[in-house]
Image (cartoon, rainbow over all chains, first blue to last red; front, top):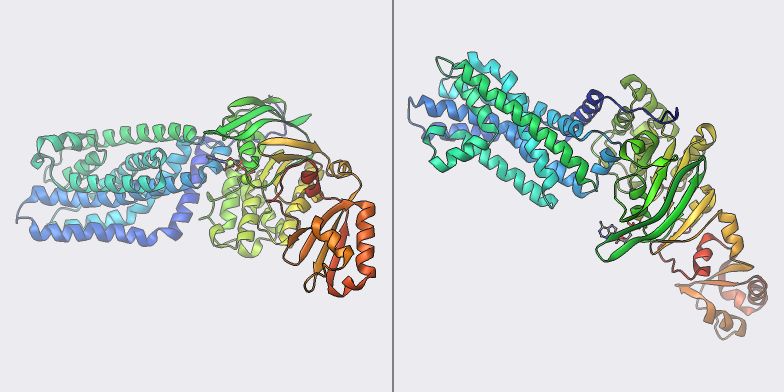
Length: 254
Length: 311
Ligand SMILES: Nc1ncnc2c1ncn2[C@@H]1O[C@H](COP(=O)(O)OP(=O)(O)O)[C@@H](O)[C@H]1O
Ligand SMILES: [Mg+2]
């Protein structure tokens, strides 16, 4: 097995890092306008709902700001990533990574991480604007340091899966957009006010837990235990969906 | 030692048999070619050889071992026919990233990328996205990613399609350097006869999913026998009322004002002599008399060779 001329393989970390920096570099060129779009969209929704929401309805206010913030991440990690992976697959672009035998989870994690990173500025701005609009405390916003990567990773895992599993590239795009719409509706409406059927759906959508964690930190008395549970769920979904995406990636090439 | 040994490879797409029982053996250190028109099954074959497509039947050995993904990644650098994965990256980043994915550390990858960009004269476009380059330069950039990280076996699916002659020579020189300085083995797909004759040590000629001949280009051409290719280009309407011209008219393949004929050597010389000695010369713009090319190998074997390129 020891042919000295055979090349070495990168470590998992190096492979992930290479995919991450490469994707970040390409996205910086191509996606910046879209990131503004994501933040504008969320801020627009908050302004609209501010007009509709009753005064002193702080439950709704917390929910709207948290939902709109996570929506920025969903726009990029779910929608754009599903679209990107679907297009790459359709054009045979995944061959490049497959022939290099880059571990599937490294491709998924690297791509997901770069897309999640891109959403940080837009999401932070959205959260700040939201707090100002709805008169919410800023002191809990540090939780974004955890919420954004975890929401990003779990949504990106789902986005990657959609891109890999959709029979055609256009369907991957549609699926990504539908996914984002689900995040939008279920994120903005407080769980208690949803019909029973939709509460079940809400419970299986990974963004819910990110939204709930963020919304909880806007309360006067924060239920930290609940926040931790929500974040752990996010983490579990992220790990599971990225691992699954990695496995699907390996098989999707043939 | 062999770089590749494949036996009985079959691959179907639905009812269509894209590879129909292919055997081939490529020796280590040789530039082995797959020549065939579009649709012959070259890409299908190559994708099986790099583990991206599962054969319906047959087996593949790479550097003496059964093929698997990890072995391919360690031994082979593969240039797909369509390279879109790196289109959004700058040329430098594309090469550097690929080098890291082939196990180089960051600084090593950076140095390797710089050297390759210089070797392939890509320095001026190093910071432009691959996808924004002209077709030829884009292909050259993709070729640079293949050389990153020094694999002992290079599998290249039409590396020079769309390149201008200068860039094409740069690719050929780079391939030759890898072979002579590092004993690299190369498997090169082409539908270009000139390329096949210039750079290949041995060539498998593919047609309809089968290898119809496999030898050195020189021996394949020698096997065509004592024939010459006569090309005539007319300035105006060819004078078919001349008996010498009329005889050729029946045998020629006509493309516009260009006539192309394969004739036994003696007949070809006699025909050219008759035309250039008589009044038909007035109407003749240009002519060439050439020894057989690999294209004639196709015709000899009774295969159609429409998709082949000559220049
Ligand atoms: N994914 C596919 N699905 C169906 N048919 C295919 C597919 N890929 C290739 N083919 C068919 O198989 C044949 C060989 O294709 P290919 O291997 O790409 O040939 P080449 O590379 O020599 O041009 C062609 O007739 C092509 O249309
Ligand atoms: Mg091909």
